[in-house]
Length: 447
Image (cartoon, rainbow, N blue to C red; front, side, top):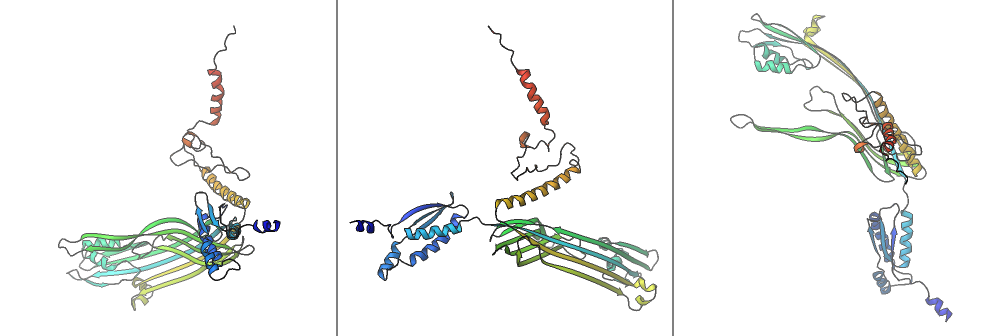
């Protein structure tokens, strides 16, 4: 009898049960879909010792249901004991604290541009009808056809000539009193420009999770225009098509932590800005720097992702044949320009693995104090312009230990240190101390 009881008093292999498992770190909805795939493999194997029709019946009866409750981030699982043990083992290995990665990028660019231009353009009108009989025109000089139209009195071309004046100094000379009228334009330009761009985006994300940082503005670009000139009265319903493009800094990164402290980073970095001016451009011009890479880097290591060293020299020499070769006087029949451009661009990356709360707190405190130091430097420059009673806002000081700071509030939740119209705390304390003495009732007479 005892042997029979011992044999019968065992857990049911095919008996079902339901358990609610609360997750600490993993996402319940994401994990439930993965567990369903695992459960289909468990039930597909059948039970040991079962063959043929018995195994098929077992697979039909071993129903495993897994669903997630997003409100409590929990899994509700119904499965036989053996399948439940396998699923709980998988959950325990997946529901762990994942490391984070702080990615710091540096985009440094130093460019230098120097340009020099000198040219002379001529136009001569020597007939009574006002026809142009001679001119010189160079690509770097003012449009002398507009000058010629202005010379014979065309008001429209006078306006075009004024609008076509290029950058630099343009000096005009001429004689319009006699029958032979002539004009000359001398253009001189010396430009010197330098650019120093430094962008240091920082972004934090979980291991194997994509993160994106975008800082910039949407700039409208003209992509097309249409004017209906078929009507007898001229243009009808003209319009332009405009498309907005993002201009600024974009950083997209996906880190993968490998064995030890090595990381694989998939990085896409773009830094663009509007160019100040570009001769001959019909619309806005943007300078764009883009790099897309997959690199292997150690924790805390600074790695150069790529760069560019560009050195360009462009020289243009235009002249009238034979006349431009005459010593000294030949300068009146030529136009010269030189442009020197030097640019150095480098992109660096530095990832930091954050495995615990202490490391995350240290990194956060460092960035917090850096931002507060910048604000304090702005406050030392003085109050807000034309608002002498309004001080520049400053983040509250971070206490020791990295605890979240308590922001002092005043009237309507405003910081008294920022809005001086609020009474100082000293006056408030004095008023509080005096109030009980003034409002205290007289002592009652004892009877």
